[in-house]
Image (cartoon, rainbow, N blue to C red; front, side, top):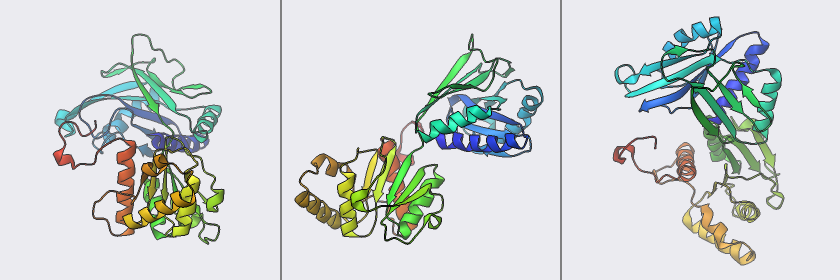
Length: 335
């Protein structure tokens, strides 16, 4: 959800420079099931533009209508939608609609916080019934300061929806062939921050990779990346020697959330044997963390299908889910 909040801040920054007001709609409570969970948000601008979504499309038109009073009065409100009869999701949603007008220094603090990859806290105060209240509102908690969307915000006798958002998930793709282009593009569509690492002899530039954040040209021995618990790495150079060199360098980094290696099982075993034989300092623990061949077995053949396979495996690992068909799952889909 962090990438959605980034998109909202990007747009409100542009809108305010153009003198356009904004209103933020947030799902703060849910009873039953819905297309999206509490904590999703959308930005509405008085010029009719929208960023984000709070449902599969059933609620947005009504939110636009209800937001008119917030644009006019500046008073936050809560709308309640009974989806058992109207949405088809069998859930009841409480949606907080409030003015959204962060100051320039608050926007700057937000982007500094994002760049440092720190978690974000958000608290929204409301009552889960159809109502208007000058004390309703949300507060975005950064390490350096709190951004109060409503200066009159008070928490007394109000319910609080609290959310913690991790930094955007980051994917390093080591390799620059056609399949790396597909992987980077699709990962960016998921809101991930994608960085491509290519060998210095690679002629491709960042322009060849739609959606990626940056491109680095680094020798395997000089690999310099930042790996944390919200980082995945996929090695896919299609060169045994280069893969071996990059894997050796990766063995010296923190493990991160996921390490994947493209290629068949025989190639993986040959690469691991060479890695351990030439560099006995490489630990078995590192070898055991590598997902190779990278991806889930979904019958993927084309670069686009292989991309879906790899991204699906990364999601299953970071969400700690054993992949199964939803038709075979008992209970809620989102659990």
